[in-house]
Image (cartoon, rainbow, N blue to C red):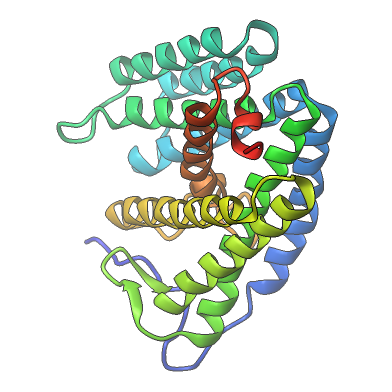
Length: 286
């Protein structure tokens, strides 16, 4: 007999903050690691992303495989990590080719879910989103600012949605997909994410502020779409969290769902405005 995913909020007893402590402690460890990798350079970011992608695909395999991971999944995890680490040595296009090859392998080697080659799609999308972060960071000082800007928008969107939604409650945003998310949380996330990104933009660049506001709002909205998409997947597979590796947050997929969509959108903004070789410049210099 299937069971419904557990709700994180008891609607009859008001907001509960029992998970706030673990969330804050996790953030105290995660933020310095991520910021340090961004500042150290391209290789450090590639190593971090490689590890994140491997763990994320492991969680995906557990979720779609009914708690079991096939031997092919471990091979795909290794390929995702290798494709990421290859970026500093061989550049964007070779790394992209490796990610595409990995997605094709995942499609061929792993079982499909229904009629869709979901494992290949997941591996390909995870890989490309990681590649977008690597391209944003690049090997320049401006890449540091671009990565910090993306991080500020995403994390403040998540934090704003969490605190405002938990405190105010109200009408559900998408009750069939995620019963705990509310319109107040969505608006709070959009406001906090846009404000945080605009502050980084205003202090870090000389570009028009209104452009920073628009891009920050777009990234914040896309991040929430990514969060909802992962919530829909978890609801489909009747699980609450993708894993339990991050106290208070769940799994790695739960932590990067917003990053994946936000990073892809910001990458395409940078490429459309400039070139694929200077993504950070395309994002920040107007």
